[in-house]
Length: 345
Image (tube, rainbow, N blue to C red; front, side, top):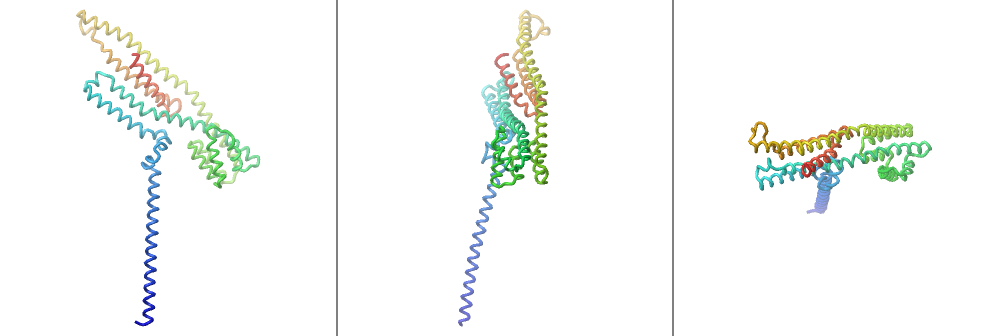
């Protein structure tokens, strides 16, 4: 082997080693990229669907009122079926026709299903109403400060120290984002998203578009303030006008219970006594049969509970324009009907 062959051999070995090292580095980089991709996929799954529910169960269940049905409905079904099967196992199938215990399990299951939803919906409706009532004042204050020559970020910073009720934390968050360098339009969109109301989304979108177009933002802020003020006033006026119909629904249910109580305690009791006396005297059973008061009570209790539940939904639709808003009335009237028939009639 000559000197030239020896040099070529050394160069070939060095090149092969460099390729080997480059291959190892490439393999290591691919493994790191794969690991990062895997972690990102796991994080994405945790942010949506069932993964997000297991990671943040309370947040998922309470961010929208209807989400609580994920827990309340299965729990209600479990309670009903366990009670149903246990009762039949202990007392037999005839208990379905001779006792009201199955009715009690049904009422408890319905209450477990609707009460959490009614509470969360009431809290959400109150939150939205308070936020929307504070929006007009916030927009007017911004417009006034902008008219005086103050920039919008400085105006937001100044009004952030004022008190706007439940809107104040959102305004302070808006001010913090803008102080960190976030643009006014982007921060305003974040502000509208955090409020989570249709009225806020509409107003924020209007102001953001006017700010991008370079128009008179003060006039747009005043227009948004007037618009939100009118919408809030119309909603309040509607609630006040429809409240009388909600009261009528509640009073009619109370009258229904009162009539049934009088019917059971006087008329049916008198008929049962007369029927028993006629039978003991040997009168014809065609003239006066036996009156089964417990069966009539159970029938009337079913009627009262069904009326109370459906009347509550109707009251919610008439009073607030949403059927789900009537669940609080339905739950209250269902409890009143159950207590009335179990303890007083």
